[in-house]
Length: 159
Image 1 (cartoon, rainbow, N blue to C red):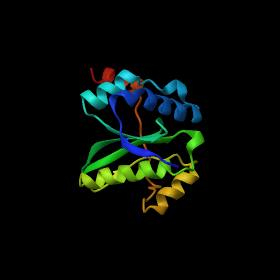
Image 2 (cartoon, rainbow, N blue to C red):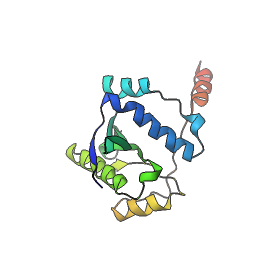
Image 3 (cartoon, rainbow, N blue to C red):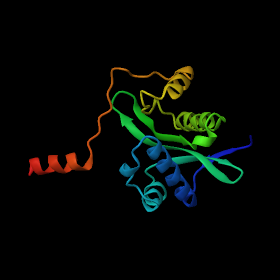
């Protein structure tokens, strides 16, 4: 299969949002997607808050990987892989691996000491893939999120 992995452009953001929604629907969390095409365009291309790579097959975007820089007090500058998504009908074709390699190359080219991401504990195929590439799954670390309601609740406490 012929494909191209490239940096996303502003005009790709509607397709990136499609992929985000496809993953959210697969995870039964479609209602949690609040981001819009306009948000993606603004944050990625005006504010420079993320870099996105897309996998294109026959002129159609079939996958994406969205990354941004973080700072670790232990390692310094790192790359965080927020999402790597391949359309369900294109999984197993090598697109995910190619996007993953684009992320690794991006991190290497920027001299980071670590690339980090979160994987669902039920996603055994991804876990095995990541471990086979030398990634370590941190079993003892828990991901913590504070949603908007929690943020507001804590701000009110501090007033």
